[in-house]
Amino acid sequence: MPDITIYHNPACGTSRNVLALIRNAGVEPEVVEYLKTPPDRATLRRLIAAMGVPVREVLRQKGTPYDELGLGDPALTGDRLLDAVLRHPILLNRPIVETPWGTRLCRPSETVLDLLPLPQRGAFSKEDGAPVVDAEGRRI
Image (cartoon, rainbow, N blue to C red; front, side, top):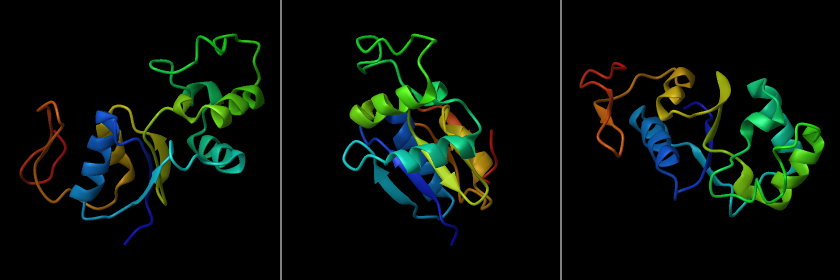
């Protein structure tokens, strides 16, 4: 069974959908509820480097202190943005999925299918009813 980790927020529909898609492939991932157990700086750096994106691209604005902290300032360095995420883990956008085949911020939720080498085991629809995978396990 492949090693898959999801940095998950159970209050987030997208995160719940991604977790369900991983399980629909027959895999039980390591689930890190990052609001309860925030990743440390080294882990954040490793995840962001594996995604090949700037720190700013993993920040969440909605429902966070992003604006209050002035994080939209383009002069802020990646290290300063990481400092903010370490103080306020809610700033980390989710879900981030790490697999041997890549690491991605899985928004939209079907992005996770690009990281799963195992086929889906059946039909899957998002919580809102939008179909993602058909009865034969093929992406729609």
